Image (cartoon, rainbow, N blue to C red):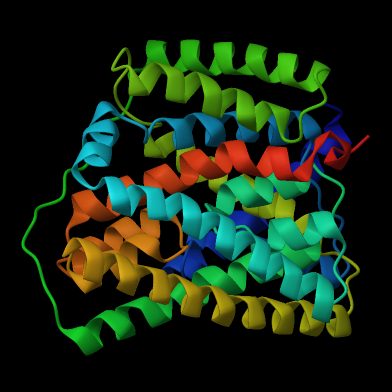
Length: 343
């Protein structure tokens, strides 16, 4: 990496880290992603030359993929047998939310198909934005829309749950981290699979490489544990910084349009998800608060933490969000198609 490029990256990382710290202080949702994205955007609009080298970005994609796959444990399979109808409805809900929201964005906001699908994806923020960074889409629109979704769900779901005043008492377990040798081996194998997927022209190939290898080793119980926070947190900060660099040069009018579109889609998905959750609660007897949090299309970490804070069943909630991420990791590359990949 040339010295000039290294200096630009160092400045970008510094500003991104500052943005993450500020987001943490004001209790913003997904602070390690959204904080750096906002900070880098503001700095770029102020005229600073900011960038993240492609090599660093690619490593981050692999790490995020491994982290996602690590949530798919044998306990998820057990949970699927405990709540079969509820699990099936998660898959149905993902498809409904994805295509209805995508139709709204294409019909009323004139988004292209790929941008509309990514902006509508009811999935993990880091996964969707990693896909967006690797595909031919309007990353600004996707980033704003997804950020609005995460923020709105983080605010509205607790309010909705509070209205029904239903509580549980299940404890939550903090997952352990993989050992350093296992983690290194996992990243190397994931990179090799990612390179193979690149040859097959898959979108977000390096990210998918991490997802595939991590799921295969964790769901069988061959490997246990997730990516340690000392690696995952900087990865999210850098990914958020990558997102922010794509906002440089955007006009206020473009931001306003993307924000309005994101708000409309968020209302649509909240209404649909609440209706599906209510139906599942009625048919299965699952407490309504747990069903609402389980079917809310927010981030895994945010919704799992919310389940604990609101005393909903964390096992039920966590298993459903893991299933949603598993399904999305397969569904999104399929619906986007090979032609979505950049270059």
